[in-house]
Length: 134
Image (cartoon, rainbow, N blue to C red):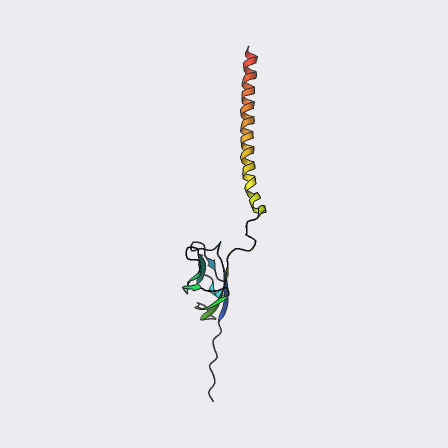
């Protein structure tokens, strides 16, 4: 009797590439057995999501699966699921985000008023000392 050979188990990995966060200089990293073996990035100039490392491919759609080789005592291959996003969740700029620019403006005005106060105090002190000498 002939039996079918048991298909080897594959590790499961995933990665999420966010267009406004991950580029070639700051790529996304995969999870689990795929970590440090495969990376993902968004190429803005050609509007594509890509993976690089143990596989060099364009990601055609969100949730696309790739089979890659891994270096593991348990697995020879892994099924990598790649998720793509245009924007990081919660990172769309709102009015609340623009308020973070206001403290810098406030600090600048505070420094200017402080300098004016110091300069005014210095002038007042010098004027008082001049009047005392008379």
